[in-house]
Length: 408
Image (tube, rainbow, N blue to C red):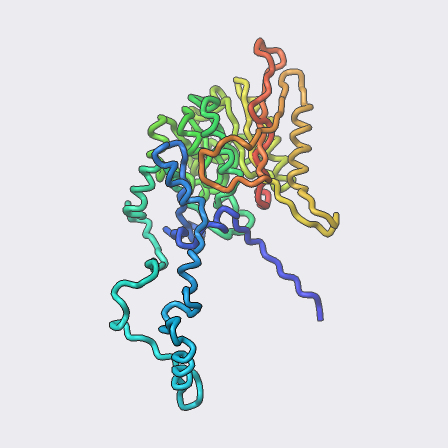
């Protein structure tokens, strides 16, 4: 018999994998027929809400007292601790049908106690929310808004080419870094590459003046636009503007065709090259060809921008056992590091790049699981002939490694 091999190109982010099922709220189907879910991530910048933050990231498993009975009998079995053996055995002998099978007699609903002795149990029902409803989460959403949350629509268990529609830890780490170092982004013009669901761009807009949220694919960019609208209460306070645009790393020029959705206007192109000083990228370093394209785009943008710029990158270092090496390796992360080294050594007489890791032990301002494999880095481009001395950025390379997505 031939050896059976199971293959699957479906990927599920750990962020969604470990989220309790009752918090997966399906809101609609996207243009490709994929289920879209709504998740909330708590921000810790409000002191009044710090006490409630533990509930989001705490243990959601059931209390053991709800699972077992103190007497050793299953809850609702009707057997008390006194004379339990005799009573239960007696009943078991009588509860058989004509064929000798066990006939379970259920207690009538009217005979149930009006107030159960144990803790009350919540009934969990599937919830499908309509796209047209304005208040899709009711009272819970209003309470969450008061406690500062960011609401993100996303998909789950997507094909490899659609992993940008999920939320990844590296994006949460990069957003957390922005909240921690707000002074670095205050009033800036920011460009995010491979924005995915737009989570990082939304957080950046709470302090930046203008944020260009870029990726490829009309359906993904439409999801970004919806998430920006869902979180207008966050961006409005800082006065930041988020513009969703298409930017393909495999193309040298920006799309300026007005007939194409999410294309660039002449004013936007002028503002991008004339005012951008911060570049962001999270969880986009998982395929070698794609990583090369990202770094070529970073280099190309650095040459076209009028001002010196800082790039903050984020990636999760994913370890895998490979038959080729017969060992645990992280080839995607190793290739990412080699690209950083090449960028740092690059000198064309006009520009110079400096790279430095970001210490990921800073205090959390966002509730998520910060694991050891999340890596951070930042880099800065400076003109060799400029009057301003070259400076190392607050974090030069990445904040983590990325999921495996096929090159676009």
